[in-house]
Length: 223
Image (cartoon, rainbow, N blue to C red; front, side, top):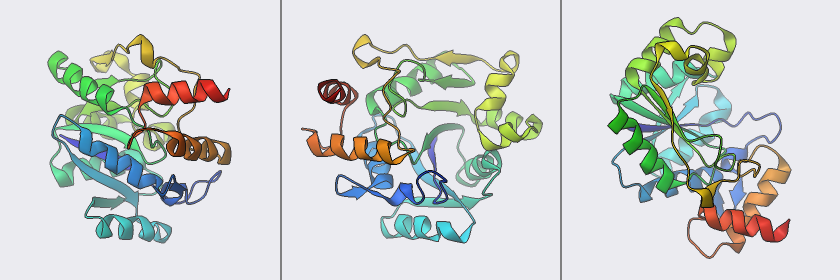
């Protein structure tokens, strides 16, 4: 089982965001650092593209002893598929490098829920704040998506062949505790306003790694 974190420097709305400073450390460092709190064992790999602008991502990973894989810039599904093969993952947790506040407690619950239910694809989206949830799928499901998902959005978005063809997969959604439900709150980093919010939250947090309940509380105070 592994965590594959997709990352690239070429964001149109916030270029270079994955290495932008948030509260004293690069955004990517927040994503990687939080994973050390996981109860489940899973190897983390940053999957970027072969485009030269992403050399800085590879350099950061090498300097911080983080595994890195480079694949197709636009065909993200292919990048995930080949990364999973390269590292021998039987189940893949998908994260993105623009989400610095993944809820690790819910991620562990997601993994347990997925494995206990023998699901093909399991996600924790819909009730958590945007950018806090995660998803996990089997390599067999990923392989089928790679083989049969030919539409452009299937190649760009790793999970959309699953959601477009639910009859082919056992799909489940993780139940979320009431205290963490805030689907209207953005804790992803896609715009400059998102970056400002994330930076402020990290600076105000009483914890090394900002928790979901604290983030909701801090955002409620500032609303």
